[in-house]
Image (cartoon, rainbow, N blue to C red):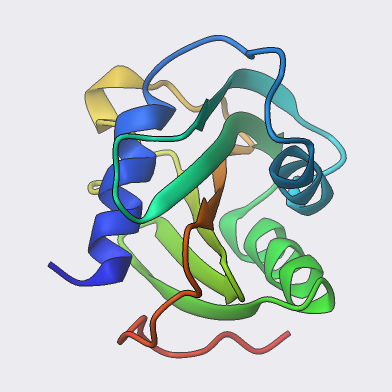
Length: 159
């Protein structure tokens, strides 16, 4: 399994849990909050530390409904991630934009979903009703125990 698939699968497992937890890793929370669109309605946040994984030290992620379309919302997240020193990779299609970012021991997993999406690592289409004129945005930041390995993440995003 590629690192990207493992990260996204791990992100999906945690993102389906609900509730914002106190005591989250402040650095990861600041990354997620700094990448998130300013105008947003929070659906859920979740954090874990000392995860059961041999690779993951800590995780923090949230999901929101955000007004706007996939392209402008996704482009703004990519721009902020690159400005914060992340190398960002893009993948998508079928009303789904998936972003993976790496910066030293930190990794990002991002999805921007439009109504009518078919596939997602975060949520099943049957489990979410995206309001008209909005997208669902899920951002997870992970701190790895060792530097992120070079893997095939797909094409690089350009801000």
